[in-house]
Length: 161
Image (cartoon, rainbow, N blue to C red; front, side, top):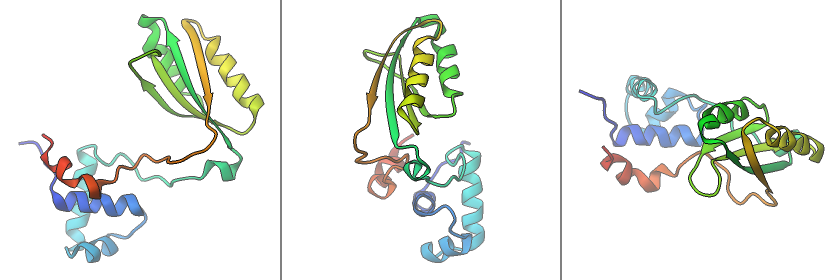
């Protein structure tokens, strides 16, 4: 029988999204459960692939990566996966999405200088089987996160199959 998640699992995820460095004891005390329960639930969530890893949220601009580009890419269909994988290997790339619409791929990347951005765009545009690119530069970041506000969506998550 496949494992399911419940409200306690969601509450643990909410706490980890706030601060993944919280100790098991802190989470257990906050949720009024045993530390072993939190440990077992986190391992279950890892096994299920819900928790993939624990990483810090880095302010890239403080490291000098002030330019964020969103690049739409049109490619020859049968080479799409190959192109996506090549772009995903680039160190500045933070996301690669296979999408519907005007473009086949959307890539998000961060750069220190316009020259770095220019070099990257020319590299992607010059890739064999890339038909065209369209680059947008982010002017202001209003929201940037990979977290979903689970506390506001908990009922929908629990009802999903």
